[in-house]
Image 1 (cartoon, rainbow, N blue to C red):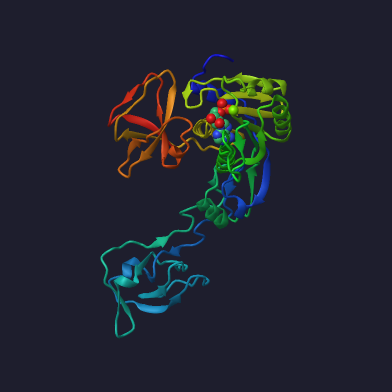
Image 2 (tube, rainbow, N blue to C red):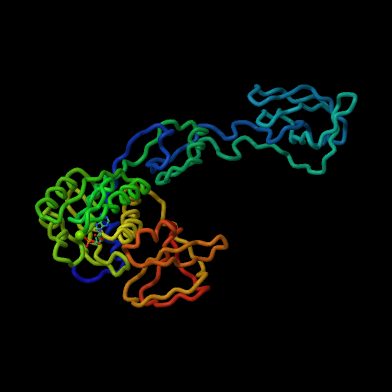
Length: 394
Ligand code: AMP
Ligand code: MG
């Protein structure tokens, strides 16, 4: 406690504190966005048979020089037909079963239908146009590994592999509490001296996107007893608790002491990052607790860089932060460099990044115009156009 931790150390303390959530078996149609807790194995070869990839004529390649008699038509979904006779072929539709002995399907576009009813190959390409049985997926093989964050395209793989019930990790239950006498609900018009609570709703949305199950516990007034009650209830009902505001050094910033009163062991209360220096983290036997700064940009960024990785560890996710190296498309400078910095940026179509104008951690609209946040290492005051920086999408 006390001294400013390096970001990497803070991140390690947070992720080392994680426990793994339980598992649940759910229908594959509702699995998108969840984390797999088992390998998904296919019960069949995919494709399940030699399948035509085009509309055309299934034939033997070594008979292509002859005019071929059309022995029948194969549509998708028909049962397999026996091989054609000598110098015969089948007209076949995309998705149809290619008969045994046929090693090529030439495309309709490459076929000339003769007045005799026979067809002649007029093409140049000797491509097979056959998707071979099992070439995508072999029966018994793992198609999606445990730890995978399930994407829409994975749902297609599950469907093809016949996995209609899948085991996923439970979502961590995450409580959001905001604190401050100045806060009013967004539906209210702030009176002089008041502002609308924006953090809580932002955090709930971030938690949802990160794969947690968030619940808003309301606004705690700057009053130790009320804050204590709300915090204690949130701790007993959740895996992660985030309370925003009240962690800096103002007269009413008593969140760390209330945390301790609630039985939380504080592991750090200051990180060498900007914004987000007073970020506080502690452990309770029932939950992990974050005190995030009240400024909406700080709380947004600290959630992304600290809480999201924690949720990934808790859900056994193998997703890693999408950090890319990119080049500066303009100059950037800052007045102090004693902390690692995060700064909102635009990613230009050509791949250059432009730092956004940013008036500090209360500048809430700066993030809505940003594609990402760039990381400025400790000790670095200036980044010239062309310099390489790390950028995280937001
Ligand atoms: P604090 O961390 O309590 O010192 O608050 C720092 C700044 O963030 C102050 O200007 C607060 O009014 C503002 N703030 C605190 N909590 C919120 C919130 N939930 N939504 C929007 N702004 C907030
Ligand atoms: Mg406050």
